[in-house]
Amino acid sequence: MKKITLLSIFLAPLFGADDWMTSFDKIDSGDTAWMLISAALVLFMTMPGIALFYAGMIRKKNILATMMQNYTIVAIVSVLWVVIGYSIAFTSGSPFCRRI
Picture 1: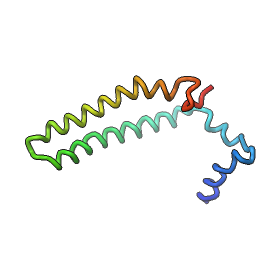
Picture 2 (picture 1 turned 90 degrees about the vertical axis):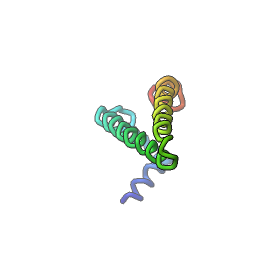
Picture 3 (picture 1 turned 135 degrees about the vertical axis):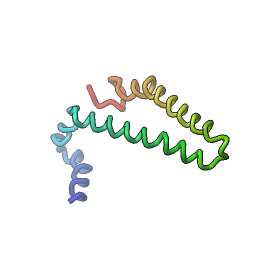
Picture 4 (picture 1 turned 135 degrees about the horizontal axis):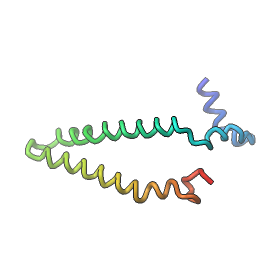
């Protein structure tokens, strides 16, 4: 069943079936909330996970410095996403933005 659905998704644009795309054009608040919660959970899982992983590979006296470097990098990447990535992704006319 999954193969048929996946195949139809890829072949539908070739045969002019544009009506299946109408469901993707609308922004649903439930989908948006689920994506935000999922992203937050992954971020909260990744930061301590990477910090503890790298802390296990170094000497005991350098653990705090390594953990703080990981948290600093996450903070820098978060600020860069807000400043640069968000504007690239959601500016009208951008190739990454589907809104008109």
